[in-house]
Image (cartoon, rainbow, N blue to C red):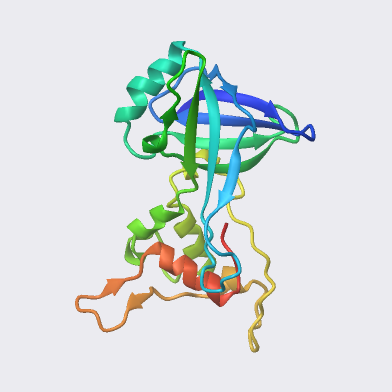
Amino acid sequence: MAVRFHTDFQNDVGEQYRINIYDNDHNTTSSEITAGTPGFVLSYEGNNQDQYQPIIPSKIDFTVYNEGGDFETWLNTTVPGAPEAQFPIEILTDPGTVNEAVFWRGILIPEQTQQMDEPTPSAVNLTAADDLNQLKETTADDLTLASSPTIVDYIYQTLKLTRAFALWDSDSLFIRYANDIKPTGYTGSDWLGEGIMYLPSIAGTQPTEYYNAFEILRSLAITYNARVF
């Protein structure tokens, strides 16, 4: 997997951004394309004031211009027949500098691609999602967990199910949390990292059924009054 296309732009206060479009079937150099104004739009879905909706999915919409060549071939030949999650998306801030940082990562949704019916260079609207809904496809018993997994192990293995996870290096910091909860009687120093969590099953089911990874993450977020964005 390598970057297939990239586009750089500057917002109205001078901040530099880069959008990278990866392709799981691509392993050579990337081509530069041109982004339309305003670069991208990041939106969150749901009600972030609802304590029972702690997981707030996000998506981005952005426009690039089809100027022909490799991009036109990719757009009209590769994208329509591509399997789901073939094109991870990455947005960087301060690209190419020592301050380069990841702003957002997700998966392109090919079926939501819209190309304007106009002469080239024609505008192409692309949409990508953060892939949190993918967590609903895996149940707790299918997570890769060691014996006596901790609470943070469940969170980590759940978030790894997002199909943009491959964009993180093996030594990258993938999850951040503040250890600001310390129940009475707890004598350790890291509640999430040390607290043991049992395999969550659905009571009364025969054979035993298990909650999906999305519901596990949601229930943990409610327990700790947290939000997952």
